[in-house]
Image (cartoon, rainbow, N blue to C red; front, side):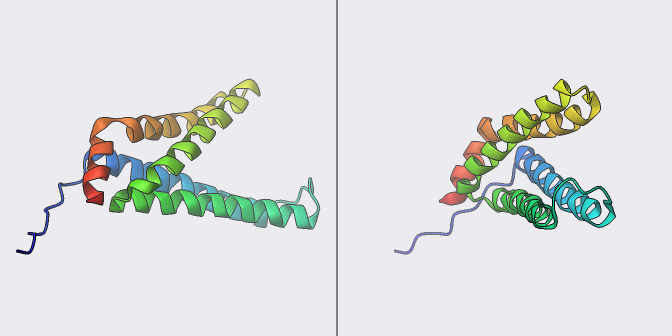
Length: 133
């Protein structure tokens, strides 16, 4: 006998929240990089360094957006890289605190910490595991 198709449980609010956070982080990185690259007159790096750094930032933003879509679609393999990137963003936020930029540090820290916690909690893990099967 053929097996009945399994009904996928609805996405928990945690998955929606992670998706929104990752999408917004990626979009802000991409747009901010493009605006900075176009409007910047300060030459801290040479042209090759500026291009390389711009490409690196755009790729990072694209990876965050892609991971958001993958988690939203139920790919459990996207959970670990999303955790790693969020942890790196949390660590990066402390450099802003050390430099006296409290608001910038909080803007980095709060969404990344929220996404990191939401990636670990039970509803997210269970939904990603059931979405796989």
